[in-house]
Amino acid sequence: MADALLKVSGLQAWYGESHILHGVDFEIGRGELVTLLGRNGAGKTTTLKSVMGIVEKRTGSVTFENGELVGQPSDVIARRGIAYCPEERGVFSSLNVDENLLLPPVVKPGGMLVEEIYGLFPNLLERRRSQGTKLSGGEQQMLAIGRILRTGATLLLLDEPTEGLAPVIVQRIGDILRQLKTRGFTILLVEQNFHFAATVADRHYVVEDGRVIDMIAAADVASSLGKLQSYLGV
Amino acid sequence: MFELLGISPGALFGQLLVGLINGAFYAMLSLGLAVIFGMLNVINFTHGAQYMLGAFVAWLMLTQLAVPFWVALVVAPVIVGALGVVLERLLLKRVYHLDHLYGFLLTFGLALIIEGGFQLKWGSAGQPYPNPLPGGTNLGFMFLPNYRAFVVVAALVICLATWFLIERTRLGGYLRAATENPTLVRAFGINVPRLITLTYGLGVGLAALAGVLAAPIYQVSPLMGTNLVLVVFAVVVIGGMGSIMGSIVTGFGLGVIEGLTKVFYPEASSTVIFVIMAIVLLIKPAGLFGQTK
Ligand SMILES: Nc1ncnc2c1ncn2[C@@H]1O[C@H](COP(=O)(O)OP(=O)(O)O)[C@@H](O)[C@H]1O
Ligand SMILES: [Mg+2]
Image (cartoon, rainbow over all chains, first blue to last red):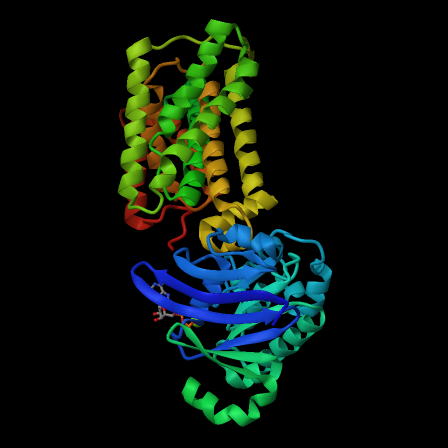
């Protein structure tokens, strides 16, 4: 892909002495929605954290808009225009919903307005003065996604946004991801729920033991079901 | 009623005022300690020495450069706060990821060095600092010295302003969030290391501001912070580390309790705070306003 927005090549990462990523390669074009699929412990979260600069010990190359990110601290990476929604959601208990939403600073022009975000998540508007962690799991997930839409970041890293949520809410998150895509966001989505991923993504990368072992385009999903099932153990 | 209790109203209100004054200093100092601990994960045992530095810088400015109190009240905390920033950048930032013990040894050692150095140069005796607001008002039941009234009001304003900064502003939101999850706050694009430096500078500046306010009341001496900070640590333990308002209320409250103890049971006045600390630790180990994590 000539105009990859994000290009990851030979990415390795360590937590202390444990070597977790052994050379991850993938790329995302502007405006694409791409997933990282894989079993528990495959290294999906670690890949997102390494892109974001949260895992400090990393080698290889991660370029965003042709600028190298490996070696940069995470605040600098965020200011390039990448926003991160962690697996554990990271809603702050000492901040109310409004404050949580307004916490991430605007890094570039062109982000969504607070009213637009509340329009997307009306439940949050009703509870804007509540303590962030008093919300239900689904609402906290909406808050964690909503707060990174304001910043002007063009690439969103979403780590298992559907984990542990009821089917109606999963569906709602699917709707929202499709809307964000039409708004022009580029999205890297980590998922274990393949059936959900298949409904939103353009392409899927399969992660296993700290490497990307396969790539499946949305059009080939039907013919690759057997292969996918063996990868994911479902 | 006063006759029944066998005490004069003058003595009662006098001690109440002393208690409020002491409480004002407890509140300002425990506030800074709590904010610093939240962000840096370091218990700042240099706090008493930095309080002393505030008073000393003001005194030196007055005696060497004839800088009046009201100017020193602003300038001295800025100077001492800037020294705090340098200290954080050079030394403290190296111990955050280590056990609390390292932060304790570093900040405690620094306090000993600073206080020792000042003792060497100026001796242990106190230096008087002239009262910038002489005179007072007779309230009928007691005489209220102007400067002491000013200190109580100023301390309240300073404490509430700090509370407002932390609980109601954008910067305060960053601070609260970074206290909870610095990694994530940094991944949102906020320069957390700089935020930490700023917090330490502010906390130290607050200690120095208390020191300048204290100069005309207590004398200016190298060890003026040592005894005070011991009580302040007890105040922090009683109030709990988590809450800004908790630090303020506990600081003033314990000052008043200490003052009243001087009236009703003078023998216990120097230990009452530590007795309360022991009781609170037994019943609510996280402190009155603290949250258990
Ligand atoms: N903080 C950590 N310290 C050490 N090992 C970790 C840490 N986080 C994750 N791991 C290990 O790294 C591997 C990959 O984890 P992760 O990236 O979270 O997987 P996934 O998100 O695909 O489920 C797992 O074996 C996990 O045990
Ligand atoms: Mg994961």
